[in-house]
Image 1 (cartoon, helix red, strand yellow):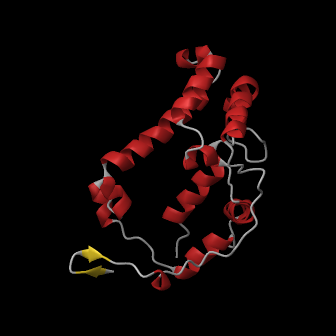
Image 2 (cartoon, one colour):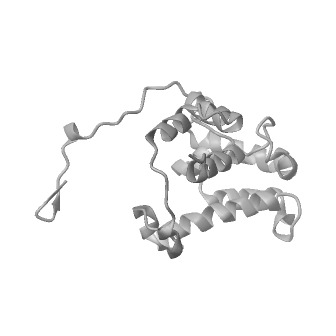
Image 3 (spheres, helix red, strand yellow):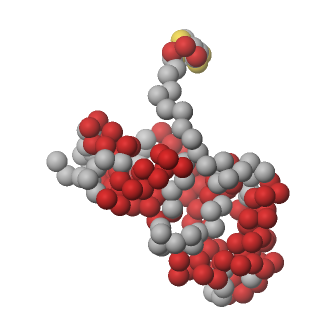
Length: 185
């Protein structure tokens, strides 16, 4: 709430309607040494299969480092250094190059948010999208959030997120696309 240019916030006015949920503590260990060990294991053992397995949610084929990266437990630079220490051919398109490319895309979008802060304020990156008529349907939003849209892959992904606090990257893409585009009325 603004009052003569100054920002004042009353904590009693803020309500967070998130239910208390159980999240698998083993998945989100806030321990730098464990995150580094997980990174090392992935770069040594699993990065070679990443390209073939990353798109299949039923296969444990991702790095599962997204939470550590998102919270700052690991930096992209640490990931790059570890990957190149274990898989130096990644820079030339060899083993590990697909995961390296995913890290680069992640950083590209982080930089977009840094250098185009309007993106954080509901302003589009591409101006013509201002003319898009977005839906404002609270029923559809609630169905999406609770995993009851009637679209099995979207529902399974959202239920997984609600139950565990984690969602496979491919499912994040599907659910985000569904959130932004559909279902049609």
